[in-house]
Length: 248
Image (cartoon, rainbow, N blue to C red; front, side, top):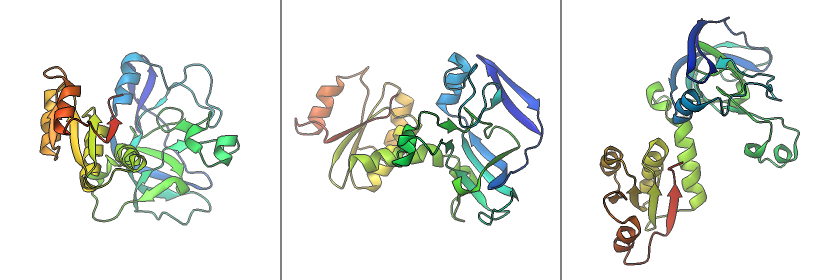
């Protein structure tokens, strides 16, 4: 099969690689869509940063070279031993992080803090390929009313929705979203669904135009106006109730 394999800084190769076979508890997935994240671009231009070039990841035993891509939408093609769900033919997205399950953070359920964590496309082969294998328990079956193309945004949307939930924003809150990239624009839409008043802040006019199209109550360009003063004017001199930083 074909895969886009990362070999280092500005060295990404389309290669023929062996077809993966699912082990116990795994499923083989045929890729439908795989988004290209800003992190993927940064890894290509400035890396290796997240992909290790020397020490294998403690969970997966993998290092560079490996197949990139983590915003995966796929169809289940084959089940490994013991797997009963999902079913062959199901369309799925992934929880794309593997952890050690033994450290203090994993035992506390704070798996995002696992020092050995392995993200798909960074410490194990990812979705910029014809197929990939992944733990069945870390797949999420898509409902019929969500297209595979739309589902390519599930991974960044989960980041945005998590931020909005942690902010506890509710109807009537005034929220500034700093950075109107993919995650910022998704956070904007989640906030509007909560009934919040949202101000998008970015230096890129194209991004601000899209933010306005997606429902921002106001857009602020710090290159053209003083952002602090403008946000104060929009909030009767008080300032936003909540600020979400999506610029990093």
